[in-house]
Image (cartoon, rainbow, N blue to C red; front, side, top):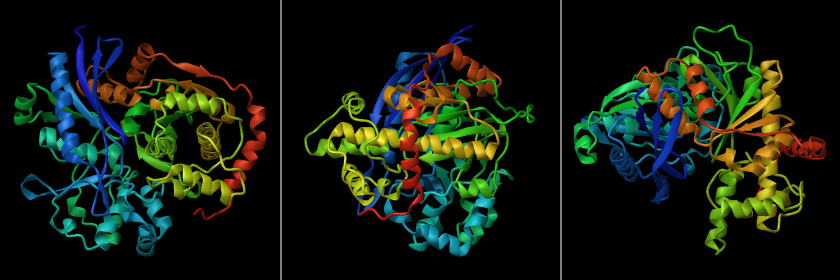
Length: 508
């Protein structure tokens, strides 16, 4: 079979990449052809994504891919969720998209729940309550009397913005729409009740697009600018976690539209990076009192499946620590930091990674110290101790979320598939196996780019099913397995962590 080449444009919260995928009919080989920083910019007190710069980098990635291969058949974009842009008539973008970590949504949820009860919002959307959800961002604009909502013609999520810029087609791909809290996963449509109740103009929400949709040919001017002709723009699973789950190499309990009677899965995925997304793939949304109490989210997957999961703060805390230390002259690599963490004493201090104080950018080491003081724990005094505190706390959080998932599902989760950049973190993977007392399968590292390209292959009819895609992953990428080594040592830490989670506290 002739080798087929596809380009994934994978935008993360810290950086973006152009990844070229070459499929020979059996295996997929990935090559990073372009990498760039994704640095937000603060203007007049608001934190923005730099859309023009990111689009420039996207075009540069297409140009470099075109120089690498003359057989480029498709390009697809995936990004994080919740953030969006607005388009006015005559294809005019209304400014740069605002970053989800901006402070504009502080206390907006309280306003929303006075208009629509919290329980009703969850009943409609099945989405985890996070302060930066799209619905709260839009409501904050309404509360601030922003003129943009009145002149906007179309709302587009971040990957759909790029899809529109590249192809001219406006639409929101379903997996990313499901992160907005404007989407009803049962009716599989935008929620009129949410829009009317919160004063969000329903008219700006465009058509919903299925993952694996060909949007159209690359815009002629961009084709001329990049030198790449006859290129199709394809919407993969545009939410990066949805793409990563496509590439989770677990095939025994995959769901498809023709297989709705399967039992609940005995494996979970952990998409590990800036955020940790931990969940299971189920055939339909699970929205009930238990999932509301546990604040689980129901997000869209492939073939009508649902990703029942929890957003956990993830390696963002380590990333912000590194930035803070670099500002005062300590430029530590991740490898150096993990070596120091591995050599630090176990079970010193613990934090709740999802505490609100760890969400915004800023002095993360200082916030960890404040948290430890507020909880009467010793303050970690060196880089390794801080990193060890964060990693052990993440592992304990994973255990807690898995146990809550088991209550919802009614069966035991036996294995954890760690995908994404965090799968390279051998210390975190081993701590996760130990804390959770479950086998961890780590890899592929490039799960998001692989899932993106696999959905492009499916759009072109080169593979047919989700199981086909995962079989390609199994054949193409090695995995590293971690078995629990000392789970008994974690018993005391598990109890301490539960006490932290269950008591409210104010951290300065």
